[in-house]
Every structure is written in structure tokens, then in C-alpha cells.
Image (cartoon, rainbow, N blue to C red; front, side):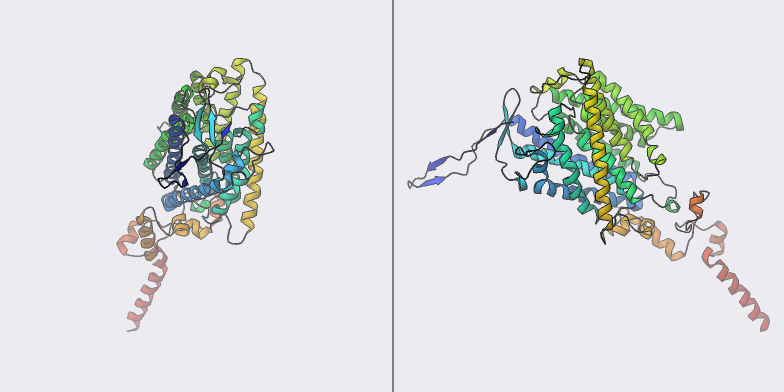
Length: 510
């Protein structure tokens, strides 16, 4: 990239005095500028879609908690990116291959005009910074799904700022900054298989480990509370993802169109594969499974949609849907409560997409943007691309997991910043415990009704020996027909019986 010095023109006033004009007279490629603006808006919409998706996947007593968490980390990420995030990831004056310097601290020195493409399309650096800032925002929004139903809001505020600074910005610099080691080495990561998908998936898995498993005796009849909200969230994600992938090439070109078609193909076949696998297991068509498969396809297309041919995206969609479906058992094997399957749907799909670049990347497709020269992957006989992709994948996974573990450990030791809510808070729901408001007011009404009437219950998974050792009278259930007829509450039955005996004794005495 080259930069041009911006000059201010001077003009004389009618009085003859020299006055400095503040009219900006730089000219830009209008198509490139609107591409950046539109891309920024579409990726932002993905954050809102993710909030709805996570809320629908949670139980109703924690539905608002997930929406609030996504919005909160979105706000923090915008500030972090403005403060020093962009500079640490993309500053052009960095002297190392791992992280930028503070040349653009606080969006300073952003008057430069960037030039890209065979037609020397010019656009303001600020437009590019805004677009890339949304990539950082969607990454932390994906990760924060790890706190579902048990994570506190307060500690995720410093966690977001620190994690973006120490984890996201360095990895983004590795592969997207022209001075980064992965960029110089020729690693293929089109729109963020490493910085967005692997980082969010594997870091979220580590955070889930530190949060611990949800209490089993509180997992009564667990299932997503609102599947319609899940479909709305998935729709918004898919809509925004077309801008996420299609406009990453910055300059509007044939690659923009090609990346969008690759993204749609991968999402379609990912959804087909996941829902069919679920059908052959349960003999039901799962809407949640369909949405999960679509998301896996979209994730897998993120690093590859601007690199591989259309027919390869069909294979990638099938592979990502199948592998990610089976990858949901990893959390069971490792006993980590990854409640929203962030690892399976984002981390693993990102890995698959990057590996497909090693095999199916085409130098022809890569050049559709008019400025990328790359030898491609195995289909172009570039055999060494595989080990480059593997080293990059392992480096991103290892770095993200170690750094996230350190950040979680330190924050969890700070008084008042413990990551996990209390068991009482988990029982009442994160909406009441953390937000003080409810997505559905009948949740509060129902709880108050049962509390007043002294209802008791037993969990549906009582046969689990782990549950038997825990408190079991947590969630209210209705009275039995006999109790309703006689007007006796279970917790008062003994007391009423004793009262009857006393009345009989008093009547006999009289």
C-alpha cells in the first residue's frame, strides 16, 4: 500500500487576506468507499443477529442476559479498536512481524489515502479501519457465548478489552498486516479463519472451562427456549456474512461476486448435511440443526470463499456440516460445558476452511480481485501450501488458548471480578441475577407464584448419581390432583395433619 500526502488548498478572501480552506479536496474511488461503508454496516448486523441467536439458544430465564452480553462486548470492542486496536493490528510503521505499534493510537494519522488494485483505487484509511473494526467486534461477540447461563457481566468488560489487545490484534497483524509473518509467508486466510473463527471458537472453549459446568440439578428439561429467535438470528447472520466475505477484497471486483456465491453454496450444503445427519439419528427434521449446519458452512467459507473454486465449496459445505456435527461430542469427552457449541461450529469449521485452502486454493480465483498474485494450493501443484496452513492453524490455536487461559485465570482472581455467578443466581436465571430485567415478564410472575404457594419439585434427571448428591428441590412443579382438591401444599401437608390431630383431641376433651 502506498500513501499520499494530503494538502490543504488556500484561497484568498474578498478582503485580500489569506484564509486556509477546510474543504477536503482529496478524490477517492466512490465504489471502493461505498464497499467499505456497506461492509461495515453488514458485519455490524451480524452482531445483532448473534445476540438473537444466542438468546434463542438459552433458556428463557437467561435470554436477555445473552442479548445484553453481546451488546456490552460490542461497545467495548468499538472503544478498544479506536483506542489502540487498529494500530496494534494494522499500523504500517511496525518494526516486527507479530504486532503493530502505536502510530495510529486513537485513530491518529488516519488522513492517508490508501491505494489498491490494478486501477489504483484510492480510499481513505479511516474507511478501512472502520470495516476491520467490525471484524474485531464480531469475533468477541462469538466468543462471549461461552458465558451462557452462568457468566457474570462485570468481568467480561475488562476481559473484552484485554483479550482484543493481547489475542486478536496480534493474530490479525500476523495474517492481514503486510508486515506480518503469516502474510509474508503466503498463508491463505481470506476473511478470518484464524483471527475470527479459530480465535473465537477455541478461546470460548477455554473460557467455558474456567467457568465450569452448569449445575446438573438445575438443568431441568433443558432445550433452546425460542427456536423462532434462532432462525431470525441465523437469517441476520447469513445476510451480514455475504458482506463479511464478499466485501473483504476491498475493491469491488469479480472476487466479490465469486466469494458471495462460494459462501451461499457452502452454507447450503452445510445445512443439508447437518440436518440429514440429525434426521437419521432422531427421525425428526431439526430446525436448530438446520441453522447450526448453515452457520458451520458460513464459517468454513470465511477463510476460503475468495480462494477456492465453486465446486470445491460444495465439498467444503458437506465436510464442514459433517465434521462440526460430530465435533459437538468434544465437549462431552473433555467435560467442558461449551453450552452454545462455539468450538464445534466456529473453531472446527474455521480449521476445515483453512485446510481446504491448502488443497483447493486456485491462483485464478485468488487473482479475481485484480491485485493478488499467489501460486494457489495443491490443485495448482503448490504442495508446500499445506504445511504453511498447518503451521498457521496450530500457531493460532496454541497462542489463543494459552493467552485466553492466562487472562481468565488473572481476572478470576481479582476480587469482585469472578467470572461465574453464584449457584443461587444460576438457579434464578441470569436475567434476574445480572440484569434485573426479564426478556419475558411471565418468568418473574411464575416464580413469584410458586414461591408464594410453596411448591416443590424434583429434577427430571434425578437418576443421575451426580444430581442425587445435590439439592433437588429447586424448580417448582404443580401440585398433584389430590393436593389441588384438598387445598394442601406439599410443604404444609405434615403441618396440616398435625393440626387435624390437635383439633380432634380438643373436641374429645370438650
